[in-house]
Every structure is written in C-alpha cells, then in structure tokens.
Image: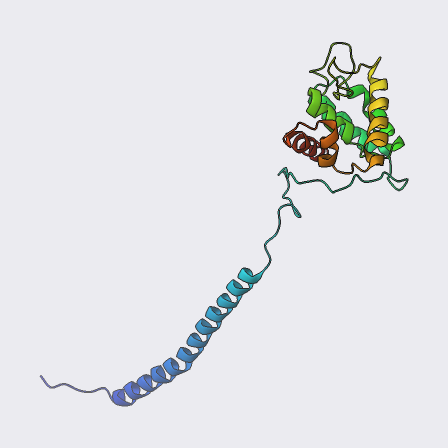
Length: 211
C-alpha cells in the first residue's frame, strides 16, 4: 500500500518543535528564579528568627499562666496617686476567701492599715499565710496570725484581729522598715533568724499570688 504525506505536515512539526523549545527556554529561567528567590527568602527568615531575642516569660507571661518571680528589693510606698483602695481590698478579700480565712472580713482594714504605715498592702496577709496558714494554726483565742512576739514562754496575744493587724503593721514599720530591713530576706533575718530561707521564699510567693 502506498503511503501519502499530509501536505504541510513537515512545516507543522517544525513550528511545533520551535514553539516548545522557545516555551521551555522562557519558562525554565522564570521557574528557576522563583525557586531561588523562595529559597533565599526562607533562609533570611530563619536567620532573623535565630537572631531575634527570646521572650522572657517573666516579662511577658502568657494568659492563664501563673509566674513566680522575686519581688523588688524594697517595698513600694503607697502614694495618693493610687486610685481606689477598693481594688486592693478586693484582691486581699478574694485571696482570704479562697483560703477560708477568718481574716476575710478585715480585707479593707488590712489595706487601710498598710497605707497608714506605708507598707505593701499584701505584706501582712502573706506573713499570716506563712506563719499560721491564715490564722488556722495559732494559739487559741490569741488572734495572732503572724507569729508576732514569739519568745521562750509563748507568743504574744491580741484582744482581736483588729488589734493584731494594727500592732503587726506598726511593728513592721517601726522595728523593721524604719531600721533598714527593706526586703523580705532582710526582714527574715530578724523575724525568724533560724530560717533556712524558706520563710522569705514563702512570703515572696504569697505576695506574688496577690498581684
């Protein structure tokens, strides 16, 4: 059988091959360029991430995470610029309520008395937590939640929680802060000199819980 060629088929094949060749040499450099650009971009991002400073969780704690940190070296002085004492009283009240403490009705008095003697409003509550589990472990009817005035014959007693809050706050101011005991660790050396550091650690932690 005799075969016949379609007229113009050779020209069609030539132009098809030419088009495919031109298409390849046009697209290939573009594709290669895009790939190289992406590779270098990813490399730059990786370098930037490696050089970026790591975020300190103490500086930027995440929501819902409790962060424990050492307190400043001195107790903040409460000034008239502080807005309402209600917010601070609410913090103390909620903390005492959570632990079922008999001190709960005296949250506002604790804040007011702390202001009176320029103490951190959390201080005497934290000490009460450390010394007596917020008044749960103390001599009966002593109203002394703070282990205040402990001596060889026992601990000092108060006639009421109100008197205890007043006397302990005044004593901390006059016998500790005014005499140069400015940090929890320094207060510990006089308040409970035989402690191995756990007293200061506990008070620091409890104060942090009331932030």
